[in-house]
Image 1 (tube, rainbow, N blue to C red):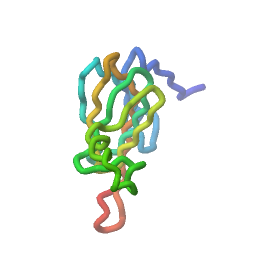
Image 2 (image 1 turned 30 degrees about the vertical axis):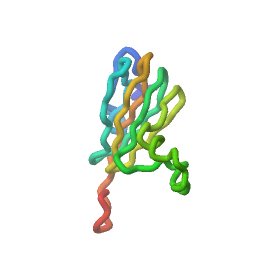
Image 3 (image 1 turned 120 degrees about the vertical axis):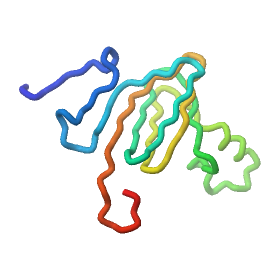
Image 4 (image 1 turned 90 degrees about the vertical axis):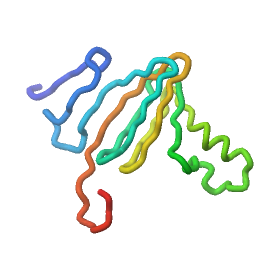
Length: 131
């Protein structure tokens, strides 16, 4: 198995896969937020994929955004409260942040642990496309 590398992310934290992989993966690792702590994840020049492995928390939506399941339900009175509250994060929840998006993660009462992958965005050949 020459070239094979096994890394314990629970002990090491984040790693740079660019040493071994030629694809768009630029960073992987387990991240932890202590109870009540917040962190912003912004997809500026990269995209992010997050997968909650333990704990709970909240992902706040960017200002003015509407949750995907509510985009056609503008007549519901509880929509503004739900959009302001964000999306609940529990074990098994996945979030993908495409280029140009952002979210603020807030850990719940027991904290939040998530797997975080950062992916490079190749330049676009189409004029006007931000990629």
